[in-house]
Image (cartoon, rainbow, N blue to C red):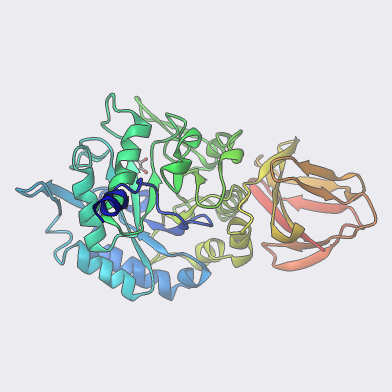
Length: 395
Ligand code: GLA
C-alpha cells in the first residue's frame, strides 16, 4: 500500500495532453491595449466575442496579457491590481466561463515581466496554484529579465508546476525563438513563439534600439524551416494578429490567410467592441479558419516564388489542399497557373497534389466564398498589391 502510494506520487510531471489539438483561437489584450488592461475591458471583450460572432467562428480564449499584476502578498502569492481588477481574477474567470469562453493569463519566467511587474521566477508552484484556483485555462509565459536562466529548464519548471496544480492549462511559451524552442518544447508546452514581437505593419521592421519588432511579411519569412516541428498539441506561434489595428483590408486579409496557412494560433489583438464589419469579416471567415483548424495539423509551405507572387500550399485532411497566392508587391499581378503541369509532393506529410492527370479537382475561392471551376482550365488570377487569392482544392 505504501509502495503504491509512493509510486502514485512519483508520476512524472508532463504537459497536459489532449489540449490544443488544433491551433488555439482567442483574443489577447497586448497588441491593442498594452498595459491598459482592466476587468471592464476583459468583460466587455468577452461580451463582444459572443455578440460579434467571433465565438461562433471558433474564438475561445480571452487572455489578459501583461500588467494585471501589481505585487505579492506577505506569503508570496501574486496580487492583481485592485484598482483595475476590483472584483478579483476569480470573478473575472467565472464571468468568462459563464459566456462559454475560456480564460487566459500572462506571466514571465524572469523575476519581472517585460512590463516590469512581478513575475514567476522562484514562485512557479505557488503561481500555478493561484492560476488553478482562479480557473485559468491558458497561460502565456514570457522571457524577459531571465538573465542567464536556461530556457528549457525554466519552462519545464513551470510546466511541472502547472501539472502539479492539477488544472488542465494550455501552456504558451513566449520565448521569441531565442533558444530554438521548436527543438525541445514539444514536451513542454502547446505552442511556442518563433520570433520577436509582431509590429502593426505589413512589410517593415521597427527598430527599438536594443530590440526590433517585425512586420507581417518579415514574420512569415522567419517561419522558414520550422514546419516539421508543428502538429496537433504543439504549434509554432508566429505571434498574435494585428487585424483591425490599422492595416488596409487587403493587408489584413493577406495576414490572416498566411497565419491560417501556417497553422498558427489565431489570437486576435484588436478592439472587439468597436471593430468594423470589414475587420469582423476577415477575422471570422469560417472557410479560411477551417484551413488553419484542419485536423491533419500540417503547417503549410511556400512552394514557389515568381515576380513577387508566392504560391503557398497546405495539405488538408481527406486529400484536400489549400493554395494561397500571396502578392507581396504593392502593384497588381496577373498570375496564370496551368494545372496540366502542376504536381507537388510534400514529403513531410507524404501527400501529393497532382493535377496533371485525369483526376479533376474542384476549386473554391475562400474569400469570394464561391466555387470557381476546376483544374481542367488554367487558373487566371488578378491579385491586387499586398493581397491574396486563396483556394480550396478538392475532389
Ligand atoms: C513581450 C511579449 C509580448 C507581450 C509583452 C508584454 O514583448 O513578446 O507579446 O506579452 O512582452 O510586456
